[in-house]
Length: 182
Image (cartoon, rainbow, N blue to C red; front, side, top):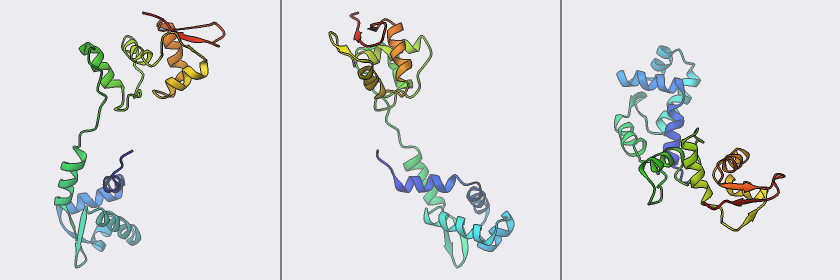
């Protein structure tokens, strides 16, 4: 997983209500730590801790004990980091527009299921999943679960949905599964 420590620190800084209040105050005017603590009813220790972290991530700067909001840094983070396009699932060619739209909406970029939809959209997801099973191959329940787990934790639900949709067949005791020919 590609993580961006600068962005994670920034998000952590912005996730605290007191730090957001400090940013709000500094967006109106610069202030000393003592002024910030008094105006926001923060302890000296808390104001020092929050200001130190905001300074660390570059959201505020300090000159001669006066803290100022670093608008340039916030603008750069917003422009370069917060607006980055996140990768999305790219459906295979040959699908109709509706199927492509459903797959893009319900699958993560790695092809795993973000959210299992309700019917009739579920059928499109099941048609996507069945392609990972070979014809003329017998699978144990454990093997079916291993394949489905790559896409979602609800292996029992997906297995049942595939059987109910007529895409997989099974022996009544669940000891053998196979892909049904279209």
